[in-house]
Image (cartoon, rainbow, N blue to C red; front, side):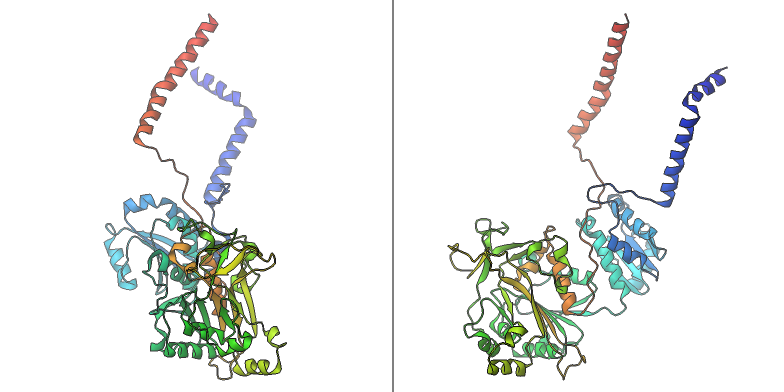
Length: 505
């Protein structure tokens, strides 16, 4: 009898309701099995970036994702594991494995015998005999997708190009800290597919196909190093220069003789520019009246130029950054002027002949980004800050420029001329600035390096948070919550029951 009553009560649901519930259960099960995700979060933290998806689906050779960390770390990095597994599910060429250094010692020994020290905790990508290590840091959740994309792009190239970074002249360096550090910059180059190496130019010849990076020297390069740079330019190599008002006079002279000058134009015009002599006086830096950012020097932040998409020019050396609505931060920036080849054609015959005979006249030259019109003026760094009385509303100062030169007959790379990119800020590539996630300085530097080195633009994967939503509560809050659930809620139910009983009476 009780059974019939139970079935009779179940029948109240009706066939339509039961069919709807069954269909919903089947739909949920099918979506779970096929791993369909409908990400409605504001920042899409549960979805893979489209650029990363394209890289993952393009893999044809086996790639192993190997996580080397112990169980306590695995409990903390659950969202990292989840994203890696989503990437693995996108391609049959990818696989996932976790090695616990304490529980899987034979596997760890086998890994280290083939790929070297594991440096746990770390995430490794393995493709044949090649490997790429992603260190586990506090910021890994924000940059994991970009790191995975850079690792896949790097491993896909069996012969990654060489990027030689000058040092020994006061340049940015890996251990320089926030103001003089280049660790984030060099890491970005590695993720863009470059094989990065530190080099003192004068000690060895530069491979013609390599990219030479001059990251903000403050001491003279010397004749030997400049001769190597000249030979590299003759052979059609790429050069990326970061320099501010502290750049050495010999490097400034070398750039002037190639149609690039920092600061105001020389008093003698293009004739003096070709002669080169830049002198020892530091060039003035650009200061902004209204578009600047207050940083450590909050009282006078006019030297921290804030550049929005309106300041970025549509040039391949920026990789389309101007179309994405990003911003750049350029502290202590010297304007960079490039000789316009069309302007040289209008000069007197003698001046035009000297430029053409020099072989250093750019075939093409362009500014990459400028200050806001009518907003900036030039002033020496050490001078007392004086706001201008009036600014030309149509004038803007170029802050970075690129130049491409015709191929030299003696070039080691037949038919290819040198490419030089110059950003008039040294600190724009420092670790302190690149750590600011709201600015796209890292993407701009990678795009400029790719253009100068004749490389395809790197995969554009911006930093994105992947951490799942969490609620952090103190012990006191938990005690209050338990008291509310264990005491207040039952009391409320008892009170409602008493009111209902009273009402029925």
